[in-house]
Length: 329
Ligand code: TXA
Ligand code: MG
Image (cartoon, rainbow, N blue to C red; front, top):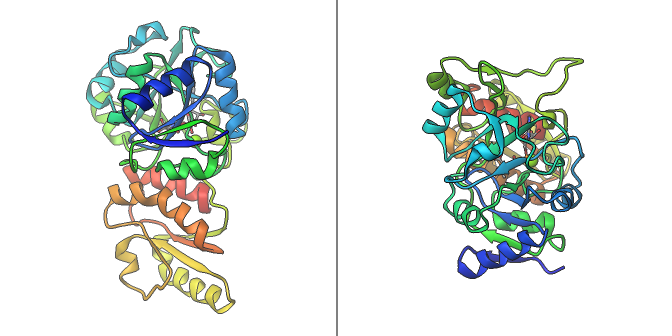
């Protein structure tokens, strides 16, 4: 199969609709990462997504809809706090898990009685979702366990030959996956951290829990039990306070003849002389936006990526740390 990257216009949208309606998969941009979408009503199409990615079949998918889609047709109960959160943060990088009406293919939620729904804010994503006017089941458009894609080229690098069409909407502005929030109980619970932080959610909902996986737990967000976001080269992760040690290790690796690269924020980078630098940028938004891009750039250049964690660990950085630990920990 020939994989084409096309800008989002009338022609590519109508082609994407044809592919989706005939049971195929299309990659599309969102404000977080690129998604690999299929018609959520179509059992065969949803199963194809798992095959293309090599994704374990107990890791459920998020359904994406446009901003005017009637959610009540898909989910059975929307608590008041969820309505307030939707009002405040949607469209945007927040996925909400509801009790399902069981209208979409059971393969979407891997047999769970809940459904994760997301309304992305990316203009190209909205145009695609409006054009097809169907709920689109979409995981990130990478091969399972690899770093999520934030450009059309990243999708191509992983899925060339496996899908027909990649809609190109530029580099994703957010850079890490959406916050996944359990909205099935009395209080919302963050299952996966992201750009909409627990603090932001609590400021609207009054309270917000944070799920922490414990030994022997039933896993409410099954994705969390899998290894994720890994670059193809070796990695090492140092705490912010250990940046001297990271630099020393970098020098040792170079002396051994390894192509070593340091990935850190601009502040840390400025304190050392680093020839092989993967600069994450100056502030939190930039660090989130650049994380996957730099991991993918790094894996193509380096034998080992030596990452230094950001100083802050809360807010958006909670999401960044979660990804960084899974990628480099
Ligand atoms: O930003 C994003 O969310 C991107 C873009 C494409 O929208 N999508 C994405 O999908 O990250 P994926 O498949 O890579 O991650 C989906 C996460 C997984 O951790 C999965 O376990 C969780 O959402 N999830 C999906 N359905 C769920 C459900 N019914 N209950 C709990 N967790 C669920
Ligand atoms: Mg993913």
